[in-house]
Image (spheres, one colour):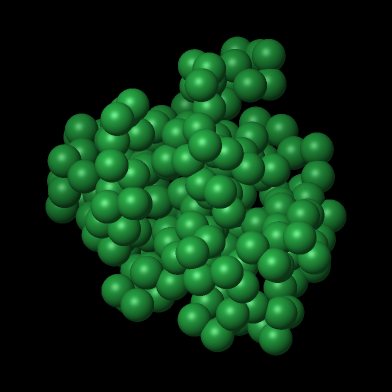
Length: 203
């Protein structure tokens, strides 16, 4: 997600899967989480996971989205770059952020630099709005730290999203590769009971 949102964040090229991003073969078969689980499960009527991000972190956001989609199935993940042309994006973003089961907030090295913090303190900033909506609606929020960075400082954040700084956050190292993305998604699927319950219900 970007402070300027759609014009800043939409990827006008074709999306690539994790294997293609790293110029290698597709990732190996994932570890099965539980009996009866199948890769690329049912086609979802609405997204289960919402990926929240700023433009500088778009590569990581796209890689996480691709691996989650590969594991959970088509339609399981929402990212703004996937919205069809002509979509009325404010309403779509608000609806998806409120109705998803899990929001993954991708937080890179520049996410809280001085410029980005100025954006965050603007109530119209879409990164902030999406996170605030998730917190308001009780969506399970997972920050994912990317690169060489420390934890967020609660006092740096607007009050309505300050809780984000207190949440446990998995990490993708700087220069991560496809194996790291698979490991991260393994962790997300293993640890987020709400995701697994929804998968097994076939929602």
